[in-house]
Image 1 (tube, rainbow, N blue to C red):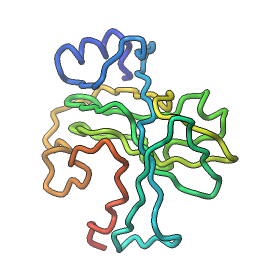
Image 2: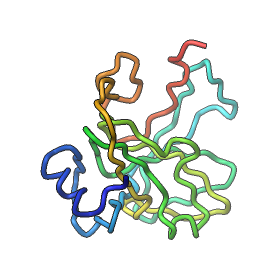
Image 3: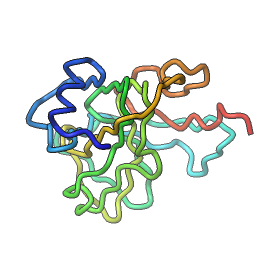
Length: 178
């Protein structure tokens, strides 16, 4: 079940959902709008290796914006820091962003209960497009969880994305055993 605006506000009041900064005008009927943070990153190497630590180059989006190029994966980040302690958060792109040819995530749209961080975005574009820090980039939808949770993300020993960062975080696939 997706939370309506009144249920999102109730969960925020009960600190089951944390959004910093929280702005009531960003609350939709059943979602919360998030914004592009001031940092983007690209991978240093053209060929990425799933078993290796692939380093990124992080840079700040200038005031005049930054033109994203097709055939390049950009890692972005949300301005908003979020926590969910009883709900499953889903990040979806806004239709206005999609109509500019911007995809904000390839596969990582679902968060886990216990995720506490800024969201790293996997941004790709179908044609050149200028983006700006602070622009609306996506929306969070919260689903109710049924049953008791015994394995919160932020308490798992093998959780790879728990260190708080307002900058994009590269893939940690290399930490897996395969």
